[in-house]
Length: 197
Image 1 (spheres, helix red, strand yellow):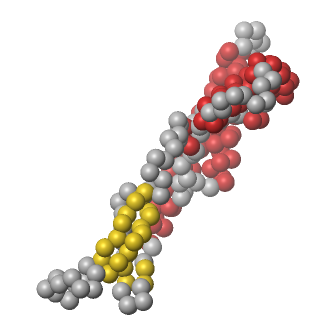
Image 2: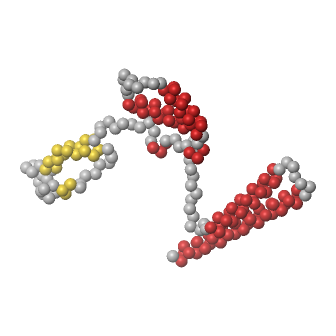
């Protein structure tokens, strides 16, 4: 919003974000419009007519699992990369864009050698009815399931393997049943509080 000395409030909106530069703004005083409006003349241009193009947007940049960084492999990859790059201090014709791309690929190669890439993180959706009691029951259910499946995968079992396997399976079924009942109750409570509000 621009306010000029002759009390004109001028607002402009551009649909293209990089068109932002306005100059040579003039109010045409002696132009007849057959109304009480006056013409305003101005020039619009892009701040940077040729914006530099990026090869990949920020969202597509690679990500690595920093917790799994192998420091020794990182050092070795860094040494190999510096040996291969050569000792050119002042090359005769320097292209900045090409050098930036070379640096980016060099860092990418070093990081790929030293640590694995991260996959896309899918966060759990928050639900209003989840609570710490359900979290404990879920952990107990997962623990019982793992105990049962690990026991079934064993090759060498005890003589009473069938009874132990049945006991572990029944423990898993009861934990799963308890979790399902508590989830249903928590949903009913949340649904009831939704209708009260």
